[in-house]
Length: 348
Image 1 (cartoon, helix red, strand yellow):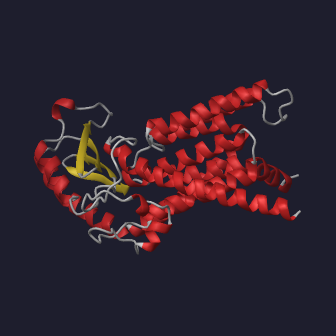
Image 2 (image 1 turned 120 degrees about the vertical axis):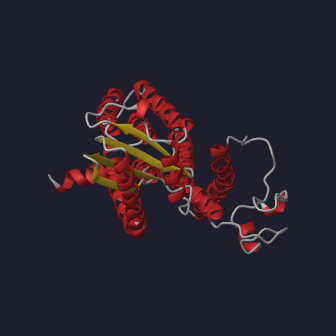
Image 3 (image 1 turned 135 degrees about the vertical axis):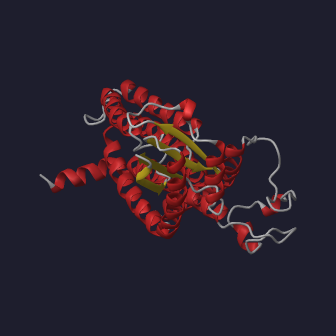
């Protein structure tokens, strides 16, 4: 018994350490992917002074603690987020091992968790989910469907055709939401790919994702309340002056992202007015108006003008939904059936 316990402890420690090492690599992927840099060439270096990081300063978690969270060369602060990613990856790999042991689902879950961590942090930083991330989740879904189809005794509630059915159902619903602006394109792809992978377990994943997304959205709204109020007042003054010069009824929709404003003008019937679109001066003025906001914060706005006056003006900050969805997907990958059985038992 003692030998078995010692082996289990050894395996758990080994899997966790392996996860932190992979987490160190995921930090590179998270940083370089949005910059279109190679993730396999080019040594790790300090982002402040450019000094190449020595191998002994790349030990996951340990190096950050020994260096006191500072670069050895220039003493610039190193974000604790790198350590968080390493530790999070180690924990998720350990949970995967404890849940699936040496089964085929272990490598699938490890790949899934790595991808979810990458897309979550990129989404937080850049409000986008890389296509290769959702494609990888979809590929895992296809592999899982094939494994189920080839299994001699699949579980009755986890048949291969049900995975396809749930993926189609979720794709239709998510597609409608994306069409009306309720979801981003990356969120739509992630939900659909996850449905193919999880099958019926997609429902607890969506439930968790929606709840966490709502909580995060409320927190962001409260945090940016003063900013939104100030920018709304400034935009109101700007568009009041503009409507005096352009009294035609129209709708101007815009977004602020990556430090720039982009505008599109429509008439009240929804027809795009390419030839009468907002002038460059208006775009420049709005860009300067938002210049004090971090470039990784995105805002969208909609201005309706009628008879030379503002009928409505709405401004709101976009939120990254990918991390909330990722938590739900990871939880359902591990314990989706248990959650479903628990919820169904509450109503039986």
